[in-house]
Image (cartoon, rainbow, N blue to C red; front, side):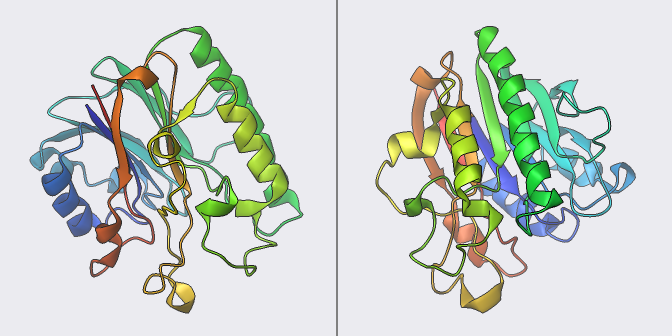
Amino acid sequence: MKVATFNINNINRRLPNLLRWLKAAKPDAVALQELKASDAEFPIAAIEKAGYGAVWRGQKTWNGVAILARKAEPVLIRDRLPGDAADHEARYIETAVNGVIVTSIYLPNGNPQPGPKFDYKLDWLKRLRTHAAKLLKQDVPVVLAGDYNVAPTEIDIYPTRSWDKDALIQPKSRAAFRSLVAQGWTDAIRELHPEERIYSFWDYKRNRWPRDAGLRLDHLLLSPAIAPRLQKAGIDKSIRAEEGASDHAPAWVVLK
């Protein structure tokens, strides 16, 4: 089973890129983020024609999450992260696909920091930890897939000081991510590529893609019930080079 996460950065604008990648990579489940489309604008007809069922929660501005399943219909479990009834941002969706719980997470960016947006990011991470702990207690196969907007360590960002004040690499952001993983989750890409500088995001600005000035922000965390099934993990870096590409590339795992 191949599970991927892809911040598509506007699903309708990038639809040709997405469809080409789906045809080539053939993932069984895909977590999408940053749809930038309302529920009604989600391109379900094109997705179904490509052989995928889908569930989604759209939002017109910067958010929106979806999960696609190849030759199947994902079963919706929840379409928001528990813990704050007043939070209406479309940043979390959870489904069952082929007997595995798969999430799509679009964690808040948190900039500028310090400030309310950074506080919201840390609070969201705290809520995610609380919910993730409940999933672990169920002892079921779970893939927490998504754009976490955290580069967890120094090797998850190209050598630079220019991001030092950015919310993506702040000590509090990194500590919150570590405490989530420490519950018992396996960071699949790091498990198989422990020392490699491997990135999933390259900003459009400052020539960062040609310079390979990237960050690893897109993660797939595996529960103990599924981690032993991990066979392969990687990032389809070449997708970032396509015309009209998202600033992210798909990250994926292959499970027995």
